[in-house]
Every structure is written in structure tokens, then in C-alpha cells.
Amino acid sequence: MSAINYPPEEIYKTPKFQKKNFEHIILWMLYNNEECEWSYFTQEPLKFSTSTLSKYFSILTTDGYVEKVSRGHYKITSEGKKQFNELSTAKEKTRKINYPPEAITRRRNYDHWILWMTYNNNFCVWSDFLEEDSPARINQSSLSKNMNLLISKDFIEKEEKKYRITPSGKLEYSRMLKFYDLDRQSILDEESKRIEEITNKTIVFFKNYDIKDENIQFRFLNNVLKLDYSRVESMLTDEDDFDKILLFLSINHPDQFPDYKQIEEFSEQYEIKKSKLEYYIDEIIENNIYPIKFFKINVSSDEHYYFQENETLEIMLRAITEDHITKFTYLNKLFTRSLNVRSILNDILEKIMHMLFNEELRESLRKFLPEYIKYLAYKIEAKVEFKETLDKLEGIIWREMADIFQKRSSEEIEEKYEEEIDKINNKIKSKPGDLDLYNSKIRTMIYYGQFDDALELLEEMLKLFPENEKDIKMKKASVLRRIHQVEDGLKIINDLIVNYPDDYDLVNYKAYWLQYLNNKEEALKVIQDLVKKIPENGLYRDTYGEILMYFEEYKRALTEFLKTVEIAEDEWYINQTYIKLGICYKELKEYDLALENLQKGKDLTNESDSDPEIKQKWLTIAELFITEIGQIE
Image (cartoon, rainbow, N blue to C red; front, side):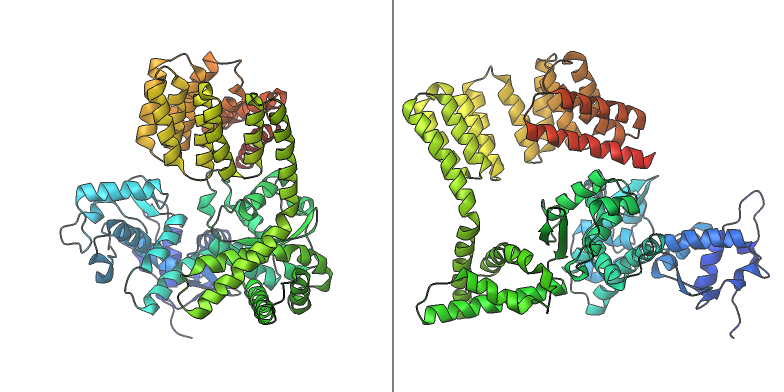
């Protein structure tokens, strides 16, 4: 056995009036030996106690600085080497800074320089970016502008004058590398650092919750690498809960059928609130809060299986589906036959059953496939400009498929929509001057997503009811916002303000529309001016608080919500104000006050006669934050 390298006495001897730095000693040993055995630390000259050694190895392993090679054998990770260098240079009162390569510094993308510096150093201080002889020197104004931008995007965090990269920043750093002419190995090395950091945490998670099935482990790691926790961190403050949510998706995969873990069973076994689990599964699967697409196979009302776009199962399913769609279309065009949807589905099902899915999923897949085929059709149509003949043919085939399956799956909805509209049209014929009937027709169109029809009807209503111009145009602005034409909606509001200068509600709407456009400075100026002009209007103060809260200025938002409560205790919206108050207190870590206000808001919501959908929305928000606080405490 090769000789063991032990640190010099000044490192492992206890300094006078100071505590021994066990972390530095352990990392020194691992850095200066290929690997270390447990006994190296318990014998002379170190003589660590077993409890001390166990404690610090646990901390260092969890932080991703150390990994266990085998029983009683440990080695340092790349992150551990960085931490060791940081601790060593701190003791020497000097810091060695890693600077970006020329491939990055030759372009003046200062945000990229900052990301590189904070990723490749344990932390950076302001002066690190201003050194005269630094290859990555940034002038004060550019540094301030870019650093603030990165902090606002949650890529960088500042604590005690030290700047560190966040988990979101590490993802952005990985994406950033693709813009540069770096060799393949450099990019792989950089990405492997991020993967190593995540896998170290994942190993601890598997150990804590006894996850031994390798298929589940693999799917979980695939999920956790692609779904960034920081995107939900503001509401889901416990990262362990986030991992449990991803575990639920990983367990309930089609490959596991017929094994299924019900939500109630899972929430009890893994100690996560059922409402929280349901909410975030819905956000990930249905509301697409991540750019990664998930597919859901419904077996029953309370049994669903999930799989991810571009995983092996989906790639094989896509290949089989595309092949059969193309074959059917070619042959049918050749023999001038109409496409038979049932034949297409049966042919695909025969191919994918047994090969990809359990036979008992056949009927569930029969219902799933039409939506999946529509998804493929839209994806293929959007992916490329059709230049070659085969590309054009592929585009025609899939556009035809989308139309066929869209018609088939939406017939029932269309029939219901047309039935509702026909009823209203009959009423309008008998009462052509009834504005309420037209408003009911608009609500129906919006409910069924017929926004173009709604915009046409609103134009017609302007001619029929010119005296209601303001209300009709505001409805038009709202429809435009729904279809992401926010600037057009804002133009309507600005024109209305000119025509109705005494209507301050329009100014209130303008502040919201500026918020929708993420124009913080102008949104706050508009609402501030309105509140100064009419200080006793609770609704305007509530808007002011909500916009401040949207831009994460919780202390200032708190002040406005408290003023709202003082002057508008009996208003229809006060339940929402209390819930928003609770959220602000929670973000400011005043948990008792947060719970008090969230519960009051919840109680008032239960008592209110508001729209059931809006009511449920606010009850869900209140319950989620109450749950979060319970987890923290």
C-alpha cells in the first residue's frame, strides 16, 4: 500500500481560541490521496472521534463534495476540489480566481463572463470583475447592469457581498456554452460537473427513501436533470417535496403497469400533502410549467401513467406512429381511398401492444392516440420550412391527419358549443336590443375558446350599442390578452383613457396591462399616481400591492395590502387581499402572521358568493401556502 499523505500540523492541530476546521482537514486528505479509508482519520495523527467523522462525512457527501467508493472508502469530487481550494486560499488570505477562456472573453457578452466566473469559482466578489490585469475585466456600469439582470432572473444570488451561481444559473450556464467554439470535451466536462452535483444529491434522496428499483432511479434522474427546482421554489420551498413529486411521476410510468401508486397512498408513505402533490402534478402535466412535454395515459379517474417526450418509450411510439400514418396516407392516396381512422388506430395499437405497452392498456391507449397523433401533426408542421418534395409531402400528410383527428375528437365539444350559441341566438331574435344576451354570448365564446368569433361579435356590438363603448372595448382588450396580444389590448385602454379621462378604473386596468408586459417601472408609476390621486380607494391600493408582489417587492406590497384592509374591510375582493397579505408575510418569514391572514382569507372566500371557479382558485392558493408554512415550521 502506498504511503498516506497527512496534512501539516498547522492544518490539523486545533488553533488557539478557535475551532478545528474538520471540513478542511477531510478535504485535504481526499485531495492529496487518491482515496481514503475511514481508519486514516481515526488513527494518529488525526484521531477523529467516530461521531465527528460520521457527522462531517455526512455533511460533505450531502453537499456533493465527497463520494463513497465502497464500504469505508471515500474520494473527493470535482466540486469538493473547488471547495478545498477555496478553503485553502481563504486560510492563506489570498484567492486564486479561475477566469474564462479566450473563446468566451473575445465576445463582450458580460452576462456570460459573470456566469462563467461564478460557476467556476466557489464565489466571486465585486472586485474580482474589476481587476486591471484580469482577462475578464468589466467596467463598473456594465458590471452593475449585467449583475442586476442576472440576479433578477435568479441566475445569481448575493449574500454577504459574495456572488454565487444558483441552480437556475447552472442550467443557463450549460445552455450558454453552446454559443461558443469550445471543443466537445470541454462542453462535456462542464456538463458533467452539473450532472455530478445533481447525482450526488439524488443518491442521498434514494438512500433516505429506500428507492432501489433501477428503472425508477433512472427515470427519476432523467426528470430531475430536466426539471429545474428553482422554477417553483418561490411557492414550493422544500426541495425534498419537489423530488417527491418527480418520484411520483417516475413510479407511475407505463413500464410499471399494472403496479400503480395512488396519490393517497403515495402522500402517506412519503409524507407529502395530497393537495400539494395533486396541484404540482397538474401544473407539470396539464399547465406545462416546464418546456418538457409529459404525456398522460388515463386508465381510470384516479389512475394515470406518465411518460416524457423524447424518452425511449416516446421515441419508439413516435417512430411506429409516424410510419403507420405515412403508410396509410400513401396507399390511400395511391388508390384514391378515404382515410379510415379506426383502421389507423387498430394498426398502430397492434404494433405497440406487447412491444411497448401492457395488453391491458389497449383501450386506454385507443383514447390516448388521437391526441398524441394531433400533437405529432402540429410538431411536424412547425419543425421545418418545407423545402424538399418529401418534406412537403410529409407536411401535407400530417396536416390532413391533424384535421381528421381534430374533427373526430372535437365533434362533441363543437356540438355543445353550437347548441349553446343557437339557444342564445334564438333569444336574441326575440330580444334584439338585450345587451345582456350579447354579453352571455361573449362569455360562451370565451369559455369554448372561440376567441376570433368573440372579437367579431364585439365589433358588431360596438355598432349596436355605441353607448356601451367602454365596457365592450374593455372586453375586447381582455380577449386580446388571452391570445397574447397584450400590446394591442393596452392600445385600446390608452384610447379609452383619452375618451373617458374621469374614469380612473381604466387607469387601474392600464397598470395591470403594463404588468402583463413586464414593464415594472411604468406599471408602478401609473398605479402610484392613481393611489396618490385617490388614496381612499381600496381596490386601487390592492392593485398597487398586487403589482409590487408580482415583482417580488413583498415589504412594499405588505404596506399597501394593510392599507387596503383598513379602508375596504367589507369590499367583495377583501378575501383575496388577506390571502395576498399572507403570501407576503410568508415570503418575509413572518409565519404566524402569514397563517393568520391566509386562514382569514380562506374563511372569507368560503363565505363569499363569487364565481365557483374563481373561488376554488383562491382556496387552492391559500391552502398551498398554509401547507408550505406547515412544512417549514
